[in-house]
Length: 211
Image (cartoon, rainbow, N blue to C red):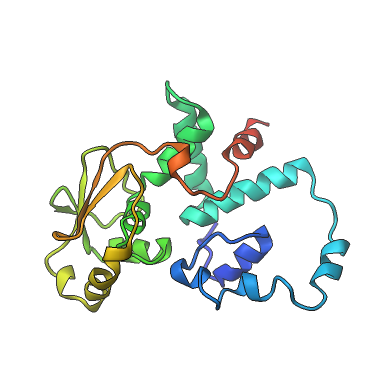
């Protein structure tokens, strides 16, 4: 299945809640989900919608997770299998940790991109280094102790200047550390479920794949 290239606001409306796929735009007054939440006929159309089955709700949660991290179905299945094989921890929480360990997600969490899609482009264009070596694979899995920084050429771009100007207001999760002076971040440890603001139910995803 090809990667979704259409309007991401449709995904949020289909899910019934914000997934923050467009970064800061989802917080501002231009968010389509907020503007159309009270549009004329919305209550009437909601009443006409058929009741979703338990299987359908589980599928919806799985799709939320996929679109949140920009992962294809085959990739997502591999991540779930990886989380299930872990000797320690619960499968659902392990899945969240595997998804959070993606390089494009870490770049987003550090504030080097306004959204995960922009962070993915930053990585693809070779602007990011891991432990001093350039990595242009968004799905690269980071580990505790890894240092994420900008490349020398990337520091001369307009994007880097914009990021530097707004990095002071960025709040990073506890499992990451950010040095605004060197514009680099470090993976302190693995995230816990409480430290991840994921808007999906990982337990429902486990139940979906358990059938």
